[in-house]
Length: 401
Image (cartoon, rainbow, N blue to C red):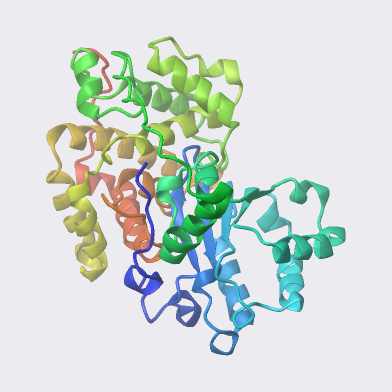
């Protein structure tokens, strides 16, 4: 599996706008948002090795910046990954600060936190946890998972999307593994991947799905999830913001990949098809908007506001024809969802925050926090100005010619 990391420290890949309200903190790259995991939950990373010496950082501002970042995502299910390596006496926040932080992160922040992964824990972490244990609810305590090695982290979440500082990846983790049982574990040659089934829907290209489904323009999983959501999900508050049990997602994926019928009524949860739709997009080998468009989307902030819709139209019209048709089908549906935002609370802006990272991502890196802004603006324009960007008519959703 390809390991994605910050090459030589946060400054090489993270450069927030100086006008950012928390630029003094954000510029260090301590907090990163790494898209979604495989089950639609936002991944938020805190890297201790990026903390500067305490006299160079106002820890009160750091706490405010944490809340500022989380406020954008706490209405959705999310996961925190804390890389402990790099925390030293010179940059360590005080116990008083930790207590203030826990008390200020009220239920709004805690209820949709699904997991807190502490990577490379030390005795210090365990001692601190025991000190705070009387203040921590049992339910919150169950969300904590210690992860001793990065290889273990791969077992829990979408490892490839994470920002892993170079110091953590190349130095600390390698040293820990080398010290384990006197040396690093022997490399195990992975068996070659199995060829996809003819009925495969997840993890294969749009072209593959089209060829195996009698030249259907829209992948069957998209047709079926969108049809169900149009009928039963348009007025559901927070649609696309909730996750569902991981086992349900795996079961539905297996049914689709084996070509078996999926009855979403069976699950009695409209969020199941919503998560399946996002999961399908996220597992495409190449993003729906293609790798080529990513850099052009990042340049959108340089375009005058009044001209951005026209620029977005140019970008989507430059896509391969099949990608354009599938994208138009999807965005037409998302536009319909946004039209019910008074009831479902999913405006074009909210939908963009959910879908942007599932439509476009870079070929060889994770999406930095600063890169999310143009992606979200681009996606919001597609949804809000659907008729301008695509033309008003939705493409047909036929599965067969």
